[in-house]
Image (cartoon, rainbow, N blue to C red; front, side):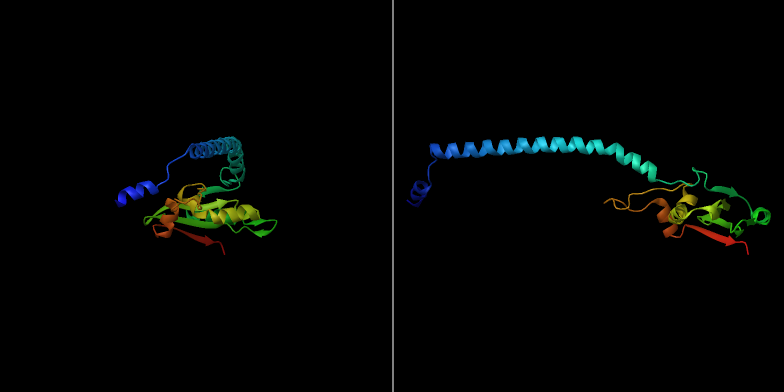
Length: 173
């Protein structure tokens, strides 16, 4: 008996209910179509931004070796000493050319100096310090999106951070 009562209590749909539901559905369709048009326009505008980002990145990326602001000179300590003795004077006094020994996995991979290092302006010097390890590990700065959600550090970062790679430097006194 209870089941019959429950069925009777449930209100039957009316013509007005269908009108209301149809109107609500039509309004939602209209809203979605409007949202889609807005999204299509936004997508088109965002795609137009892509080449600008590429151009800006190209302009902002610095590679001191490619730009010929630095030149790597592979040499031993005696050749470096000769260079320093022959070129130690400029308009500003002594040329503080540093000698570098780059070791990776326990063996020497490079030894020499960067000609032009002491002539770098503030911006380029700052860049060189920031990408110093990259210049040895890769031979160029390896730009990474460190804020990317899946970023986990470059091979260079891991090699230097784990102790597998190191650079020792000397200055002429």
